[in-house]
Image (cartoon, rainbow, N blue to C red; front, side, top):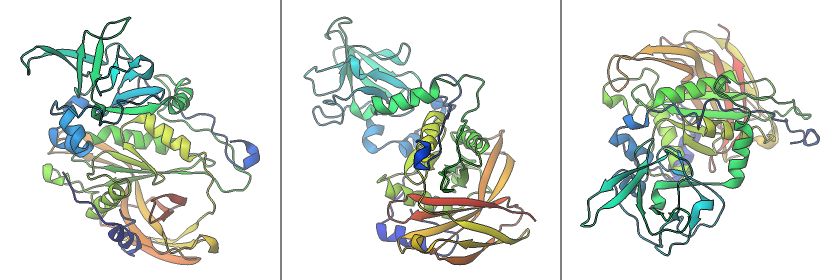
Length: 430
């Protein structure tokens, strides 16, 4: 579903409303924790998405207009006016649709055509070849073997040793710099098919300001691509540790309810929050499953490797202040909390967000894209409130009927950049 973008003013207003609508949208000497491992399980990227089952409407959500035209409609971008034709950096070119590694910069050469050109793919079996008879002269089309995205064509006029020229559209690619790849390889080298999705080991910081990762997953029971992302969120929640906290939030959006199944956890307010992030990230669309870490990194929520990388990055940054949070009373109808913030953290361009979450839930889906499946969730947001930060304050979170809160997660966020500056949680005991 294509949605309109929110203005900066709307984003600020959403962040300040005191209702269930939120912000728009190392070494031991430094006091930083030492993250010794964040491992990604399984071969390849560990992505569990059934890429061949993604509908055309979902591809329109995931891709920009040009990316969709090229990758899904077999279009061709303009030569010399695309992103990577003259890129000389070292790294891997991945599929824009599913992230499968396709080409390496060491196989790239200057062909003079105005498109990225390679003399071979980076991996056997990642690039498929089929006959293309759209023009008078037969050509060989190349596509991603995992999601069938159109990449370009291959010709027999390339350099040695293969003599081939893979002429590829930049719009079908994402580039990963070798420096980022090196960090990912270091974490992946210790993982195997039996290891958990993410494991985190850290040492307590000297200054008691613990680095954290706040993970928001925008998901829906009505989206067939979301269950794998729900499992990634569950693995991150399991990896939570006292000295390296990972605060997981499952935001169920309501815009896929029109496909035949009404998600009982969904809220238009959660969808509004995702729209605000789209504005922050300068996207013109929203999609599911989308994961956002500390308000700064976003990616497809079922991508385990990117989730592990983003969490590792977050856990290397020490916050400047801490939130003191206490649950003062709780019932089936509401949760009351008190919070304390240091004076220097109270600024007009910040918002304090409070979310009541239900620890676990399962749903037998009877209709829609997930018909016949039993879906499991962790830390589903059931109540959400935001308020202007203050040194001392209180909040009343009203719970919907039939839901049970297990925790309240609080975080302070910059209303302009989206950066999460501090976070904590308090358990709910009825």
